[in-house]
Image 1 (spheres, rainbow, N blue to C red):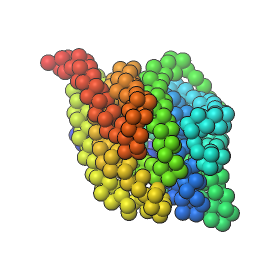
Image 2 (image 1 turned 90 degrees about the vertical axis):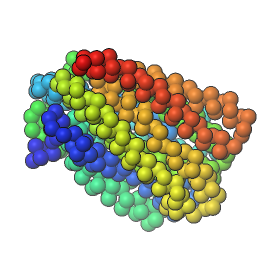
Image 3 (image 1 turned 135 degrees about the horizontal axis):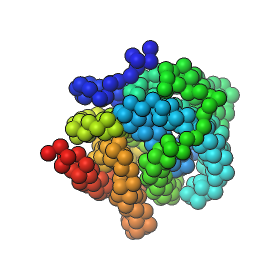
Length: 450
């Protein structure tokens, strides 16, 4: 059964294999986001605009806190992929055990950090008084389920390294059904509001973690997870951290800049927060198409680069780049074109919809530009070059967003001005990271093949 879920990334045509890898991965990410979207939709229709704002405005904060450890899971994916390319079963086994321990420790750390910083960070963001208590409650309950969230994500990274993106999808389908049923039950039947949707998400994360751990315990060697033998092997942890920490720091700084943008949005009141939160759901859906091709670029390039098949790296890069632009671009324009219809899934309040429409027409319609730096950065990480895209992304995206919030927005104080920061920083970062990939590939691949 395990073999039927694997993909041979080292031989034969690439296009269809990359597509078969990315479709379940994109669907899995969309289902994870669906947990949050269902939370937003249920409270938006059955609670209040304040509850909608409380749940939706927490997304940048959650990303800020968890991104470092998600970066390390990306590092685990790269290292295991490299070992597969090198056909080194001993190192694969050690890397799997190390990833398991990092998932447990990381999940517990995130639980304590999230609960502790919920109130101060939301207060610093200028969350309106009528939203703040609900936002704090949601965030604290959400982070109680963080150990399960991390176990699932590290388990998925292990399976992705051998080309298996289907079984994590099946798990998330089951967890998504649990989440939806519990959301409706807790909010409509028991009137638990934001606490109900947070508890439902935590239970769904627990279900997904238990199922993926069970799969890994039954997986064939050397990918099998032995619960009584999970331990850190420094020889495996070190390269995971060297690749994963820069990626995680990039995600954290990226999220920090988004927290600052969110604080600027907060100054426009609950309707702006709710409208932006509703529109953001569709940005996440489209982004996960890009992220799926990121995962393909990291895993396929990681295996082929590790096996010394460098002539295939550029082909993988261009397939992932073109397919991500087309896939995300089609969705971007569809959602932006029918913004009023799609926003109706989250709220029927016309004020909320007005702000949501501005975000969809200004931000979502141009999101495909982000493919330029996302795929290029993933390709660099697949070759073990993680710090370079991190530095460029911090400069091209994060620093420019900080300048925009504190210099431009006070001069032109409007919601539209805030939204313009996204396409501007995407273009800048795309130019920087694409150039870096070309120069690195020319040195490591193109010149060696001539």
